Image 1 (cartoon, rainbow over the protein chains, first blue to last red):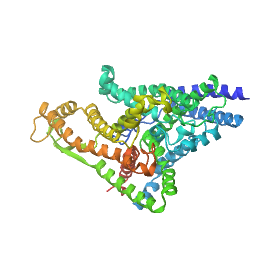
Image 2: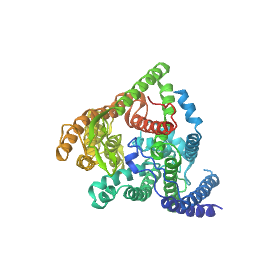
Image 3: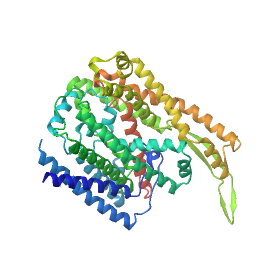
Image 4: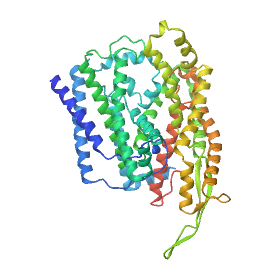
Length: 76
Length: 435
């Protein structure tokens, strides 16, 4: 069980990082951080982006579950 | 004010955005207390209680909203993103290719953001490894002897590193979701939250250790500091710019007179972050090299003069570094030649000054003059907490409520978010928050 969860965790972590990196970056980095300029991005998200959102959400859910599961299993 | 709140919630799309933001925030805060796999939760709690008030990682911990010292899945938090953005922004000056991309406009900017995201993940791996190595060697918590990782084989630790890196990626995604579908800039909003999440604990700390009367005065003082920070943040010099009238086809363009706003504090909190991370280096090196009990001469020298936050050498060098970095950062981000060139291209000029090089010279003159009070203000706000160390204790000084990085970021982000909500309200002609 523990081994299974660990493998699941590794797999979802890597996939999650990949999925997030595949997203189109929003927000213009630091220039808009900490109250820089105001910018409005009204460009709607594409279908691909929407599907990617769903995939990321699913991966995130599995990831959280495996983290919590591991934590409960170890119970230390 | 209250009616503005009501109309903000009465507008359907704005209400949806605000609720979405709140939901993401809730998800993030729940994640911030889930311990990373392999970490022993009770031992971490015990250690944390021991070292409450003395650790060098206060800035990192501040940015992670206490998640770092909990060793939660969001322990590395937003810091890699901040570092990556700073690095990418500095590289635009150094690498010609980056400069090209920056000038390209929207698509180039998108590419730069993408680079920032890749760099964030790389830095997250580094930082997670560093944090976990320190925690495993028992140095994260000072002298705590309870094992944080009961099962510290390489495989377990590697999984923890991987999980924390994925945590940073998730945080980045959450921030982008807020930017895209919620209100305000997601990344800065998350930082804001991290800082705000620590205020109640700080307040309780002061209340229990110093009593009610001191707590009351602290609250008054904090409000006064916030008010003055808002006052300076909003201050700007408006350089008038006149645009020449011109006919294109049958339509007339220009002929308007606008202004070029130059804020008193054009640099934001970046100089403070630069300066404080630079000043944390000596302490970090000292810790990595050897244990502080049998320190050699230069280590003791560093300890008394640079690390000790109440020493005058520390305060003065912090102040000087902030002023230097303010000027440095402004020269990088605000390119006067570019602005002057742009103005000339669109037929604009500052009354009484010829377009082209004289305009650039005038701009840089005004900029450097207005930055002097701005940088001194930044320095004062940043060193203010060093004078209240007896109340807050060593290491906690960058936190609320006496100023420092926390107040600067909170006020900056707060103002920005309110302005964004305001502009959305204005589209529907409602009375806003700001007057």
